[in-house]
Length: 250
Image (cartoon, rainbow, N blue to C red):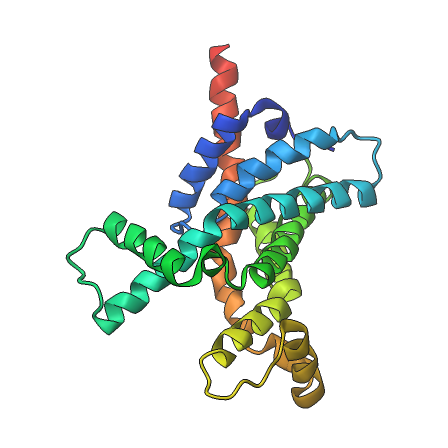
C-alpha cells in the first residue's frame, strides 16, 4: 500500500521537500534525515495493495526503525561533541568568540584524546533503542493508518490530526526508555552510584517507585508533539503541490 508520492519522489526530491517542511514546521530536530532514508528503505519492501495490514505495518515500522538507527549512528558523535562544547563554555575553558566549527573540532580532539572513540559514543545503545522504538512507531503508525483512515488525498487538517495522534502515541511508547536514559545520566554525576546498568535502573524504578514513574513528565509532549505532527502533514502537503507542478509540466 504505497502512496503516490512514495512512488514518484526520488531520494533528492524527498530530501529537499522534507527539509523545506522542517523549516516550515519551525524545528530543525524534525526527522529530515530519517524521512528520506525511511522512504528509500521502504521501497525495498515493494509493498502492494494485496499485503495484509499487519505486514504493511511491520514493514513501515522496520523502515522507520532502521532509518532512526542509521541517523543515530551518523549524528550521535556530533551531539556528544556539542554537549562537550556547551560544558566547556559554561566552565570557561573555551571562549564564545571562537567559531562554531573550531569549537566542535576541538571537542572531537579532546574527547578522542581523553576517552578514545568510545567517548564519542558513550550511552549510544540506550539512545539508539529509544530512536528505533520511537521512529518505528512514528512512521509505522502514520504510513499504515493514513491510507486506511484518510484515503489517498486527505486534507492538511486531517493529516495533522492523525500525525499529532501518532506522534503522541509514539512518544508515550518510547518514553520509558528516555526516562531510563535521563536517570542514568544524572546518576553518573552523583558521588555514589544508585544504578549498575540501564536494565537495573528500569527494574529499580518499577520496584521502588511504581511503573507510572517511567512516564513522569510525558504530559509535556502534548505540546511538543505539534511540530512533529506538522512535519508529517506538511510533507504530504508540499509533496502534493510539487507533484502537481511536476505533472503539469510533463
